[in-house]
Length: 127
Image (tube, rainbow, N blue to C red):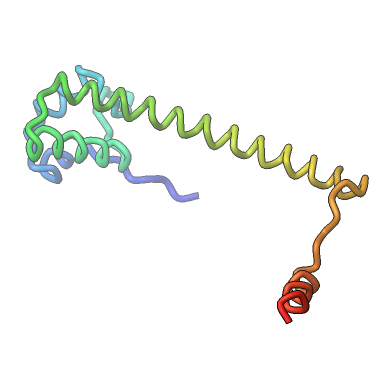
C-alpha cells in the first residue's frame, strides 16, 4: 500500500503562492487541519491542498471574506453529509424494492411481460 504524500508548510506556501502565516491563520480558523509530526511540524495532505485551493478561489477570485468562507465550508460539509444520507437511503430503498419485487414475482403477483408479444398485438390491432 502506497502512502499518500504529505507536504510541509513551506512547500504548500510555495505551491499555492500564499504566505505561511495565511496557512497558519486558516488552521486557527478551523478551515484546514493538517496532521502533525512528533516534533509538531504541520503536514498537509493532497486533500488539505485541494481544500486550500477552494478557499483561495473563494477569497482571491470571488472576494469572499473569511466569515463567508466559514459559512460556505460549513454548508459544503452539511451538503456532503446530506448527500451521504441520501445515498444510504436510496440504496436501502433499492434493496427493499428488489426484495419486494422478487417476493411478488415468486407469489405470481407480477407477471413478466414479453415485449415482442406486446408489439405483435399492437401491430395486429392496427391492421
